[in-house]
Every structure is written in C-alpha cells, then in structure tokens.
Length: 427
Image (cartoon, rainbow, N blue to C red; front, top):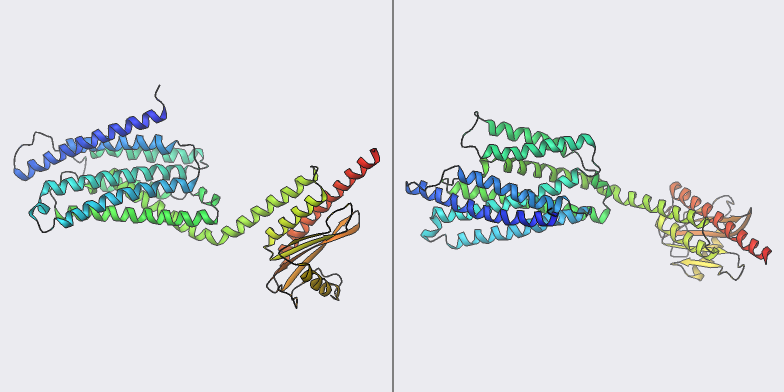
C-alpha cells in the first residue's frame, strides 16, 4: 500500500513528465499553426495533457500540505510565500531574458514566446493549486458537516471543470462564463469561514497580514504577466483565460486573501485585549491550583505579584507581609525600598480610609497606585501595591481582577499555614 509520502513523490514525477509532454505538444501545434503545416498533433491534445498536469499537481500538494500534521496557520501561509517567491523569481528572470532580446529578431519568435508563456503557465498553476490547498485547510478548520458538504461540491466542481476545459468544443455559448460565475459565488460563500483568525496572537496577525498581502502581489503579477504575453502574441494554442479551473481558482484565491486581510486588520485592535484576558485566566488558574498543591507562602506571594503585574500592566509593584517563619517580608518588582517608604507615607496620610487607590502620587517616579490588604483568618497579614507611571492608571476592571487574585492568594496562604500547623501538631 502506498504511503502518503510515496504518493506525493510519484505525483510530482508524473507532473514533471506531463508538463514536458504538454510543452512539446503545444509548441508543435503552435509551429504547425504559424507554418500552415500539419504538426501531427491534435489541437486539443495539449489541453488534455494540461488538465492531467493540474490533477498531478493537485495530488502532490494534497498529500504534501493538505494532510500535514501541522496546524500552525502562519507556517501554512509561509509555504504559500515560499512557493510564490520561487515562482516569481523564475518568471521575472524569464521576463528579463525577453527584455534583453528585445532588439533582436529572436524576441519576436512565436515558439520562444510560447515556451516562456508555458513556463509561466506552469508556475502560476503550481502557485494557485498550492494556495488552494492551504485555503482549504484554513476554511475547514473546526469544520461542520454542512461546511464539508459545501466544500466538497466546490472542489468536485473545480475538478470537473478540468474535463470541461479539455473538450474540443463548447457545449453551449457562454457556458465558460456561467461556470466561472457559479464558482465565484460558491467561493464567496466559503470565504466567510475564518475561525482560524481568532487563534492568532498579535504578532502572528501582523505576520499573516504581510504573507497574505504578498500572496495578492504574486497573484497580480502572474495574471498581468501572462495577459501581457498573450496580448503581444495571440497565436498560442493554450489560453489561460479560457480555462475555467484556473480562472475560478484565481478569483477564489483573490477573494479569500482579500477577506482574510480585512478580517485580520479589523481584529488587530482587539488582539491585545484578548491576549490579556487569556493571560488573566491562566494566572487565575495558577493561583487556584496553588491551593491544592504544597506551595509555600513565599511561592504564593511571588506568583501573586507576577500575576497582578501582568494582568494590569503595572510599572512597579510590591508585596509586604509580616515577617513570620523566616519569610522574606518584602517582594518587589521594579521599585526600590526608598520609593516604597516614600509612597507608604502618602498612603498613611490618605484621609479617605476606605479608599484603596491614589490617582496622583507626588515626589516619586510613579503617578498612581492601587493597593489591597492581604487577610488571613480575618486578620491583615500584608499588602499588595501596584503602581503606574501615569495618573489615573487603574480602572474598576483592574481593581476587580486584582481583588480576585488576592482572594485566591489568601486562600492559598491560609491553606499553607493550616498544613504547617497540622504538621507541627503531629510532631
């Protein structure tokens, strides 16, 4: 039984052989047309071979990318970027080659132009099919049964269009146009599925924006380049703009890339908020787990300080606790003991006894502070203070978050002390 890797490699070999056959047959047909002689090849043979070439490329990428274990979205987009970059470099090199021959008679040779055109046609086919497989993985991420059915109809309709493009005649007038329009409509419906975007962090979203933008540039370059070659010489046997498969793929890839770009851009402002909320949940989970573990008081205080600073993006913080059981009574983050003493004087002079926040500090590098007592068994054993270098730096949401963290830490400390006391009683 063939493995996935073996099928992928075999498909690649078959694709190369088919492309060589396609190029030879197409050039013979073009030569026969321009020389008014019988080339010995049917005019439709290159189209049939080209359709088989597309199927081979499709199978190669289906088993190479479509079933790869990775679910890293930026890695998938990176594959498109690399394929597009290599294809563009080869295509641009051929374009420079033609420009260098512009002053010679060779530049007007139909066979040479056809050869360059066929290479560009193969390059855009590879790029389009590989991008299509990546789009498939993105669209079917967290798929539903209904979505899979729609996708299968779309994919089978695309593959069926290869058989239609290989026909030597048109079934009825304008069928190609109607076919492409139907495929575009289905592509528009499928392009609304972008669940994968929600799982990108801020950095990944910027990277995805760049990679998708480059995908659009590659697509525009290939389309304009092929159209430019055709406009110069209209005697080619195989025309990109008569192929339903490639036209549908160009439209679908453009639509999904454009939609993805816009969705990611609109999601950028909320990315940092989402990541912050996720980090708060994780920190809360860590504090909750500390209740059920054998963590010491000192570990709980360090975890509380780290979680609180991260949750509200504090510029400085400290925890001060009663110096019991040889514990370190002061835990700090980006603040000196001298600054702490100066701030504590302002806290003690605060006339509003019930107020746990000062929005305008004086004489220190920080401008606002929020602080919470740490109580164990109805007795205050310490205090958590968070500072920012801007006035009015803390809001109600920040206060609620830190209050929740402190409550969890209090339970953990109380649990730790009860365990220590029980062990002492046993001794």
